[in-house]
Length: 355
Image (cartoon, rainbow, N blue to C red; front, side):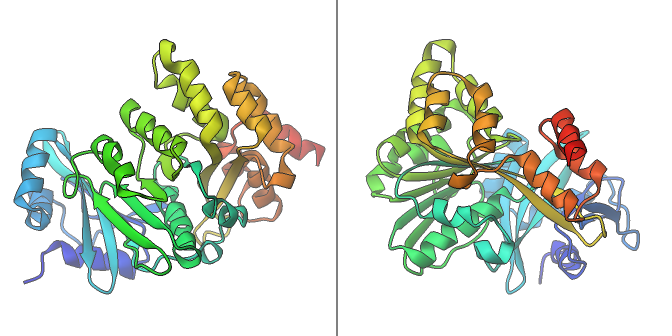
């Protein structure tokens, strides 16, 4: 007998939703085209309603981990339809859940309409590549498209470390091994400690959550692997600051040197509501690790990076605010929506005023 949650998940797919929210005291809530919608044809969840929906699809180990940590990420699949990343948490003492839809088909860079420069970045031989942005803007999708580009083009050994595994790859030219936290390894740190012994060409770390993970990812890039990961930072300069500031003052200069020597690209992205109401569209900032960028990072002159990105179009660089301006001028998004996502709202307004 199929778990009860399958019916809710199928409803999200049928309505072309991206997320499902399950909360005690509410009916199921889905996000479609960036907007939340209560499914009022369903009953409101009682005090144990969400728990009774989620726990049947969890293993005993996952239940125990949830009881200890009060948080859990798991993957779930409806065969032939989609995969789902399910976050389980407590809210006012009751179980709640947020579910993200992950398509089974991994679309290419072209199919997603991602910047062409991402194809070149994906085929770098070594270094550190970060995809950044707020939660829910498609960082995992961008990473998956880049890994799939490598998979189609190059004979590489790729190891992914994820919590949980989201997109499932099929070997094409490359050999891909996907490791899940809590199933195949205890933590990002533990997996990264030993991954270099597995002779990887490419390492994909689902998220850099702490100092130890960042440090080991930098070491792996320094040792010759091409390392991909994500951070919840809005743009490239703030990403540099975040990497450095995680460490204590006595280590920050060393980290600047490490990051400056390994960074190949930082791709920052955000999603905006389309002005015609048909969905959402992405805006991107792209930093390429040129000698000038590396020098600015090494010398702690992060404030110079904005202007260096703006002047770096010949390398494929672009500021987030310039991407937002293009979307607005093409009529894809409203002015207020673009302004709300700008890194520098005053400069964005001035840029539009100058034409």
